[in-house]
Each structure stands twice: as C-alpha cells, then as structure tokens.
Length: 205
Image (cartoon, rainbow, N blue to C red):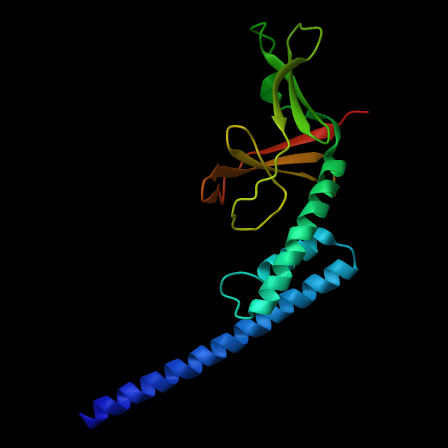
C-alpha cells in the first residue's frame, strides 16, 4: 500500500515537472514567434510578419498579453498584405495549355483560357476553335476568406461556389500560379494536403 502511494506521488511530481517544462517551452516558442514577427515587420516583410504573429497567438500559447498584441498586428497586417497581393496579380494572364488541348475536333473544343484580374474581380475567358474572340465564361469577385485555416494564410480567395484558391507569382518563372486549397464551410476551411490542382498562367503584354 505504501509502495502504491509512493508511486502515485512520484507520478504526480513527474507530471507537475513535465507540465512546468512544457509551459516554459511554450513560452519560449511564443516569445520567439513574436520577436521574429517584429523583425519581419522592421524589414517590411509584411506577409512573413503576419505568419509569425499568427503563430504567436495560437491556442497553446500561454501569454495572453502577447496573444492580444499579436492579434492586433495580424488584423492590421492582413489589410496591407491583401492590398499588396491585389497589385501583384493584376493583369491579363493566359493559361499554359496542356498538349491534350491541341485537338481541333469537334469545332467547340476549347483551345485557350485566360483570366483578367483587376483590384475587385477575376474574369475567366475561354477561346473556342475557329472563334474570333474570347468568350467570358464567369466572373468571380476577389473575396479573401476570414475563416479559420491550418495555415492562417490571409491571402486565400473564396469563389462563389465556396472553392478556396491561393494566387501567387512564381519567383523563378514569373508566372501566375492558381493553387486549389479546398472548400470554405461555416466553421472554417477544409484543406487538401495532396493532389491539389495547380494552374499556371503567363502574363500577356
């Protein structure tokens, strides 16, 4: 009976020590993310700063003051990075067409796709074989999702059908990439982890 009580005491003490160490680790991690966010902010890398401040306010972080400060910073940075994103992707972009699209029969085969992006919307065009002009297929307003996501990325665009896409410029090629993220629901964004559709466009002069 005494041995059993000693074992319980030892387990309780071990658990308490582990919890304290775990809390210290979380505090260090939270402080690190916040400081890295401050560094990125000074370097005017607003997207990177937003990412670090988002990590500093996740649910497992213990310091409520840092959480509150980080939340204010992400709210203000979100406006900045979204404005920057719009300016970056504005223009006329033609889809890099797979070889299989080169078919010429039947006459209604789509032989080209392009998008026009302005600060408020994305216009999707299709070109049919033997057609003389581009056909407007659909229009999507640029609406950034504020739903919870795994990455806390502020640049996720939600379509009218609730599909969520991420647009960015590939640094190597300069092409525009449209990357399918998943679907938006009432309680958040359901994200795919593999097999995501990826479309590439080159800029038209």
